[in-house]
Length: 384
Image (cartoon, rainbow, N blue to C red; front, top):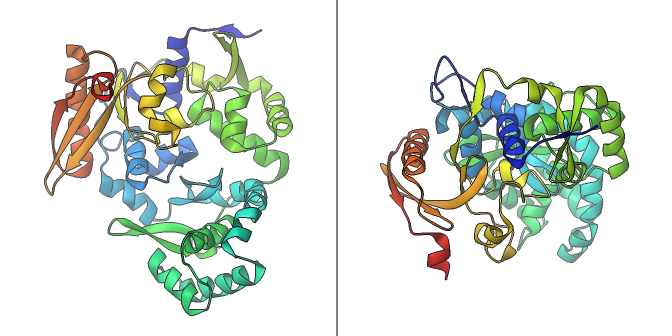
């Protein structure tokens, strides 16, 4: 029988699963070294990564006290990579997990892109040339920027005009040949997957599906079957079978008539850590993006403000007690960042305003900048 919980408890458990917590006793959140960036990202399993600066801040939020340089080091050392393992979208994940996830999801992604490839005029011959060129450019540990790799494709007679270059990179990455690895400046460079990840985990079949389900719920539970299948694009039958296989380690929960699942360990972690009540999350953070149904943290009438025009571009959010209550933006110079936080409906109460000032200071420290916070007018007022 499902355990009935209120929405506040559902959100509290999700904050804990996401690692958006602070110790209840002992060292306070913000002390460097409490959680390493690679461990924080690996625990989340895969984080939305198309907005690279936002993805790095998502990791920083889950590794309090670390800074941007430390997060980038996790990529430079080969612990973390960025690729397209889920829903055809860029994600950050532990390097060792990339191979088995692509083996599970890659064929469906490639099959679903066949029509787009015909539109772009990319055929099997073009991909054969691109594979050979990429291997030649990158073999023996060499690295290349996107521009350098696209130039090599063009020289070999495979045009990268329009979206062709990006799609070539995507296709070869989903096949498992290429991956985005180390940084040079603000850009992530392309490397050969086999050379950059010499010891990948080997999982397949039902074992891989169960691992994906466990990892998803570890970083996002409680979540529904619909959340899981939307996020992973696993067939419903395979996902349901994995939940059945894992039933002894899962707890069935009910919130507002909806059934969700959590790992027992999520419920057991009540002692020793508590959710952070006020957060500044980047626009594509998994706390909102990791679910098909976002109504628990985001009121339906606030959704158009968070994703204007329903265009799929999520704005950075202010989260209080697990609820999205406003938006924030930044304006940075060489040494300073101005963070503007705006509520949806009415001004932030004093305690939230004070907590946001602290969150903005953390954001500044993460980027090595002095931070100034500005409390803006309610978004509804500005948007009419």
